[in-house]
Length: 180
Image (cartoon, rainbow, N blue to C red; front, side):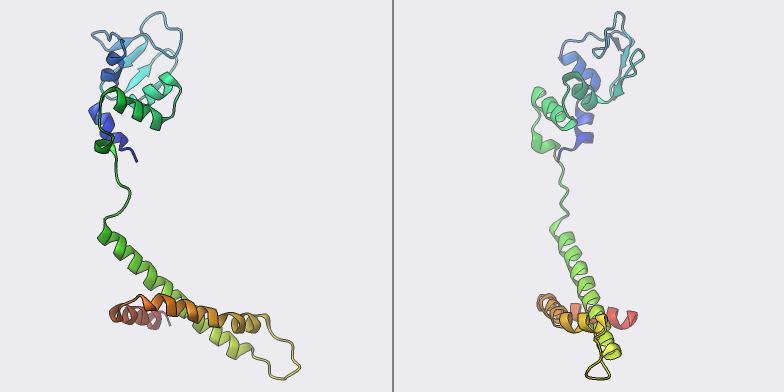
């Protein structure tokens, strides 16, 4: 992903406008490129532009996007190309560091195991509570569902716990006991 903020800090609206041939007056005004402007009505400073005639307003990326009718992403890439900026310097990583990723995965797994153990307990309770008293009695839907799925729930728990350390298993066990 492009780090737009970093790019805007490097290239100002004024820099871009001057690079494509606009002569900016001493008070920062130019003729607006977005409407038929006879006299300068657009104010350009380092971080923003604003047209008092048509109301166009934004930052350098918005200026380029509106000027060429392209997306903000395409505008950012165009700015980097025109100013010879390396895209690696203006990209940001949305991926957490490996240690945080590992901790996040561990928390997810622990919570998931705790959920499935809780679900397994609830199914066992349904089986006990709704089991038929007589052989010709119609099965309660919760009994039938629980009997049908409890083996699968146990399988999921086993799979998740196979990749857990003993400490993590004890922590999950404590979570289950706390939430009863």
